[in-house]
Length: 212
Image 1 (cartoon, helix red, strand yellow):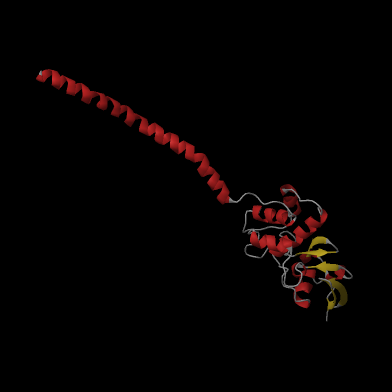
Image 2 (cartoon, rainbow, N blue to C red):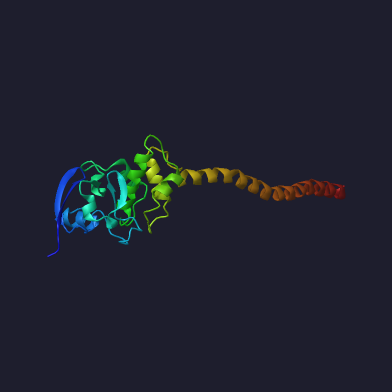
């Protein structure tokens, strides 16, 4: 029988005591012993960031942390971000702005974003800061911009203009061009109509002279 050790942790604000092999991964302890399956395993090598959790306030890859190293630590998983049934501002921004797609990378993205927003508390991080802060978490579903926008929106940033207003603005700019085009297209017709209007009176006068 393999040796086991008792690991005491605070997980999402609650004390946890588990007896596990000392080298069992924190990822597996959270999923198996704690029943917190929100933390996902992607690559299992610390490259994709899907298993990211907060350990004493810092984002770490749970797949690389032996259980024994988590003894006495404060762990926060994606389940610990919401306050009861109410989503956090960050989670809500991910939902409403399309930052969450298949859900595989989302827990790690959210956890890493929390760590970033803690570092930049009191101001809105720039796009570049968000991209650097999330560099260790990979996503295959979005173009990342929606994720960046969601993180900045959660920090209080105004979101970029919506597509609809931009289309209306384009339509307004295009309207004078269309009007000018119609005017130019109508101009030859009016020019052609004037000679015909002048010819008719002349023909009438000539006919009158001929009758005289």
